[in-house]
Image (cartoon, rainbow, N blue to C red; front, side, top):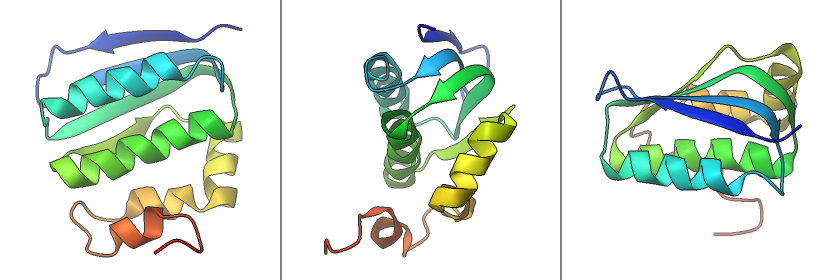
Length: 119
């Protein structure tokens, strides 16, 4: 199923990107670009709503981590909303749940987001 995405900027301090369909290698680039565009404005919060998400692969997971990491650097908190059970399981198994729970500006956040073996 192709990626579907919509943006709600009615609250400028907390834009919401609703993501549906498959967030995979072949479809993740538009979401990645939209995240970067939004974070350039440095809102207080970025919300990713996954109510209509059907499937996610490691590239899609990487977009979530990217949004969190870039948000840490720009002072924007990340909130995942309407997370389907399969995504919650993946986030837990990969340790991303713990990463996302770190407070904004956590001094250890940068090290936690780097792959093992890189300094």
